[in-house]
Image (cartoon, rainbow, N blue to C red):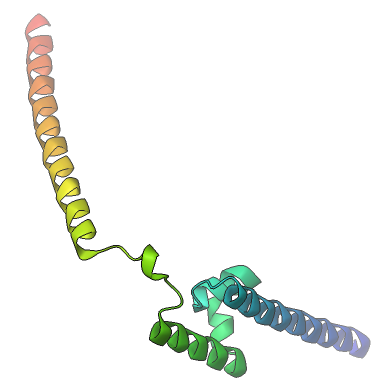
Amino acid sequence: MGERRHALAHAARRKHRIARERAADAIRRLVRERRPITFAAVAARAQVSRQWLYTQPDLRQEIDRLRHHQAATGQAIQAGERASHASLQQRVELLLEENRCLRAEITDLKAELAIAHGQRRAEH
């Protein structure tokens, strides 16, 4: 039983080391690709949980440092990728108009359905 426990402990340490290597590599790749550094992005790239990342003090500190650096320098989102206020407002207005049209269509379809149900009842 002692050998089995030793083997399990060894396997757990190996799994932990590999996960840490994947997380560190994910951070490096995201930085190199100039992608946003977030716990979710690192976790997805490294195939680890965000919760696990939060339990790793050095990785957590590095992710926080890079997030703050990107936010301060605007590196995560290039200026050309940011939507302008006017552009966002136009999208909102278009979506509101589409919503109004769909609501009107639903109202019309409900009325037609009610008429069809009435006709069907009358036939029986």
